[in-house]
Image: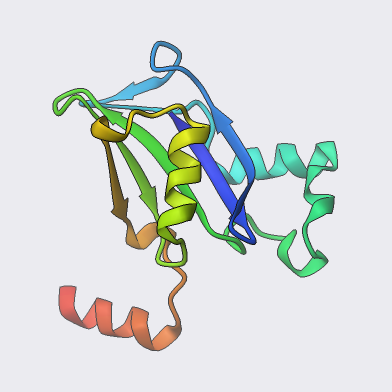
Amino acid sequence: MGIFWLYKHEIAFMHAVSLAEGLAYGDAVGGTKDHADYWEELRSSGELEKLPVVMRDEYFRIPRGRVVFRRDQGRFYVYHGNNVTRADLEKIRKAFGLNKADTTFEQDLHYCDLGAEEWENIMNQIG
């Protein structure tokens, strides 16, 4: 379980914990860090220096996502945005040590890189 960021189709940063170390919320078990706080840890440690300056100020400037285990389904879910490839998802699955048969990849609007018009269309559909 945990969080990740991609840059140029490689895992730039990730924080992972075992299922036993994960934090439970409802039927799900997630990692122990959130993107915003961990981004600040990366900034403090100098890790963000490998990114272009324009991408260092906010944690949402590069593709990101989260790995969660659903106890009610016995499956791992990799939540991601709209800007990743199948090859990217396989790299994430392998980096987190997830079994292919027990893993579902799911696009989540929270992680999508959408323009103002796309967001407006979505908001009009739901409200």
